[in-house]
Length: 93
Image (cartoon, rainbow, N blue to C red):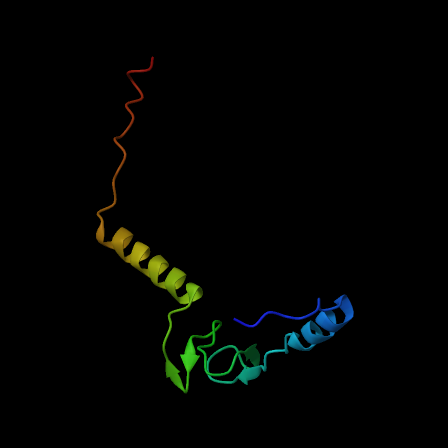
């Protein structure tokens, strides 16, 4: 195995590491669903509206909340109204 002949100085080591910097990720704008211009990463589903390449892929949290609310209202409408027993005014006196 190769062994270095001399110690690599801090300056040489740090200059080599200086070129490993991170690059900024490119951003695209989503114009598909309700978000209208929200920045998103390319080749990924928009997290705001759930669209990718013009098709609806994900269900967003707002849509799930709306669906749960509609289901709850439908359940309440199907359930017969529970009537409270009439309070007899003569018993209290």
